[in-house]
Image 1 (cartoon, one colour):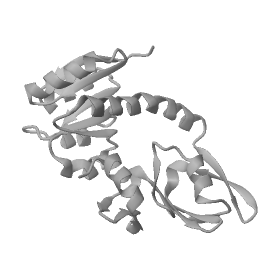
Image 2: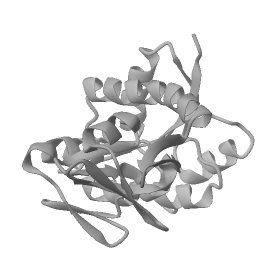
Image 3: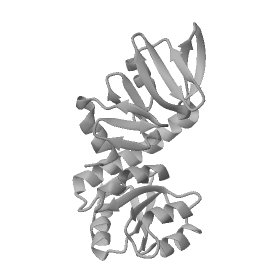
Image 4: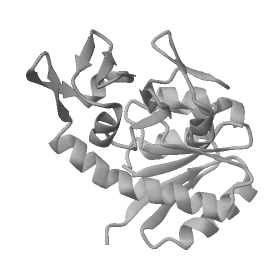
Length: 230
C-alpha cells in the first residue's frame, strides 16, 4: 500500500481538528505538517515534497489562492472553505477538489477516492495521452490535453481545440468513452467539455474560450456537484 503525504494549511484550529480526525482514519494518508498560515506552508513546501495539501482560502496576510499563485509546482490541492463563490476561480490554479465547510466525512471520503484514483489515471495519461480519431477517412492522433470541448453532429463530432476544429467520424458516446472521466464530462446530450478549460459558469451554460456551451437540465446537477457550486 502506497502512503501519500499531506499537509493542512488553515488558520482555524477547529478546521485542523476536523481534518486531523478524518485523515487519521485513512491509512493511505500520512499527515506530515500542520500550518496555520501561508508563510509556514511556503517555507515547509520549499524543502519538503508532499502529495496533497488541504488549503483554506480565507487566511490573513496571504490567502490560499495567493499561496497557489506563489508556488511554481504546488502539490495536488483540495481547498477547504466556507465560501462557495471561489470554486470556479480555484480551478484556474489546477485545484483538485473543493470542500465546503463544515466538511462532512462522506464528502471527505468521496474526495479521497478521487485523489487516490487520480494516480492511476495519471499513469494511463502519461502512457497514452493520445486518442485516434478518423478525419476525412484517415486516422488522426489527437492529444486529449488540447481538447476544449466537443459537439455532436449526427454521426460526426466537432472537436474544438485552441488551434483548430476537427470533424471526426464518430458519435459523441464513442468520444466520451475514449476520454478520461476525471478530465471530461458530458454537460448536454450534444456536448462534452474539458473540466479544466471551463472559465465561467451560469445556470444554463458554461463558457470555454469565449464559447457559450449549453448545459442540459439532466446534466446540471452533476456539473454543479463537480464544480462544487451552489
